[in-house]
Length: 371
Ligand SMILES: C[S@@+](CC[C@H](N)C(=O)[O-])C[C@H]1O[C@@H](n2cnc3c(N)ncnc32)[C@H](O)[C@@H]1O
Image 1 (cartoon, rainbow, N blue to C red):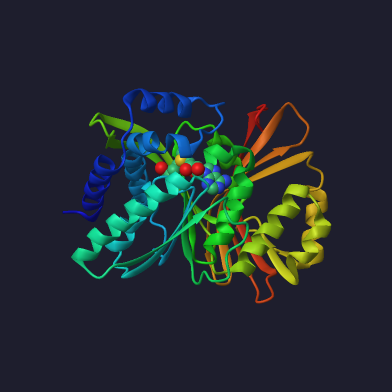
Image 2 (image 1 turned 90 degrees about the horizontal axis):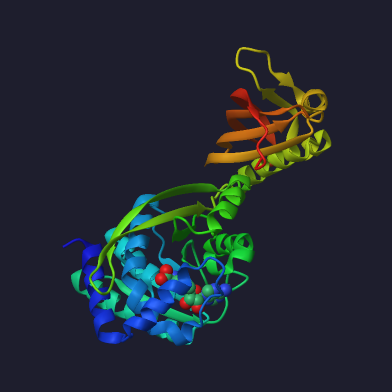
């Protein structure tokens, strides 16, 4: 039997044996959670309905997200807003499949009852997986809000999970995501899972475009039966961020994009080496040196009325970054210019760009209120 099927069986048996919820309470909770403007429920009150209604479904959504996004397996799991433990159960299946033998799971929730459920479920999942092969799981529950800093005793990279929890913290979603990235640490990962139509996504999409972290995203219909046995598909989206080990390269890309967004040639001093080369047109001679690049920017970039730059994808080497980008340039006319390009940024040991190579195409587009 596949590991995820085995864990799904454990979770289904756990729901049967551990929670009792009246159908009308479950239906009320379902309606409440579908309302975009609703305040989050009191999870200590609705814990049984939540587990009965959503544990299995959210488990399958997290399995799909992890299977497709493939975050680097890590021996530390941090389940932010763990609820009844759906994401941790999925992570244990993922890590057991990856061959890990020792895992520490940090369960974090501000609802005591939810936390108790998660701890009980995760222990059962761990016990079952431990019968098949060596798989030691330490469970560390913590009641309260998310930590603002990575606790000193956490060692190594962490797989941070935020499943159906940013939606409840929408006003601070970016702040929360940044904190999650800090908790993950270099070579860790943060995986966000939410309903595909959740109102948090437009805000996240914009913020992801501004970020320089490696990201993977996806979406799909996940088939999962409710605890009543009703077979349904659940439109689900996920996003995985990976803070890389090459902080100098990340900083160089961040600095370059900030200078571009602010259209400020003076900021380039902190970004490029004195002798940097800037090749923005294949088959043309490069622009040589920081002064030359600043001169070029004064005539071509500083004159633009507004620039928005989105990072579509990015990858790092120890000495370079490769990115795919889209920019919208507003030169004040009736239309805007959309530019789509690829860029390689080579970075020296001090974290400054020594060479930039890029290639792009552009087209004029009608002004869009969203741009
Ligand atoms: C919708 S449930 C999701 C539970 C679980 N992650 C899942 O996917 O099934 C949200 C959970 O996050 C918890 N939560 C929301 N915001 C939180 C915060 N800022 N700090 C700690 N827990 C939080 C709630 O108490 C609740 O148990």
